[in-house]
Image (cartoon, rainbow, N blue to C red; front, side, top):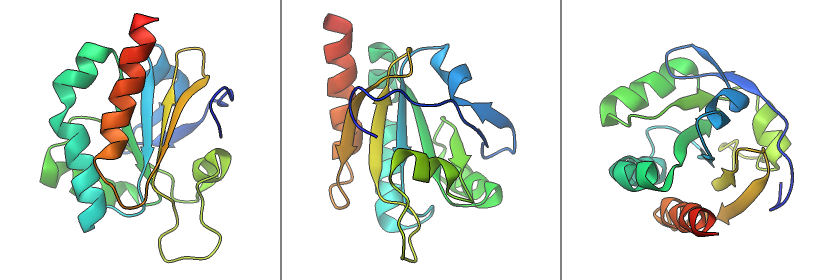
Length: 152
């Protein structure tokens, strides 16, 4: 998935087991969909907490944060409750959506690459952030993309 690509709608359960569609999120504004390898790990916790800590900035920029990984609904719930994220965590346990976005690993204990996609309300990708090691860059760059969108 690259800038300019149109994202097909998908539906996955969130941390409460509620089925959520991308199109429903997009009806509220642009979506920052961030894939992370594994809930409760050091890097993923750091990244997810940075997204949490920038809640006011994302609201001001009009973007919705949505986390996604191959973890089970139960693990996502535990992760969310422990850190009070305040945004949905989707369970892509079979890797269907990760494959759609090109972030599913072929062979690895960690099933998903760390990547963030900023998706505009027309389902077009307006930004892609890839970094396996800089956890804060995902939220920071997503905010830059959202702010640039609102000024153009």
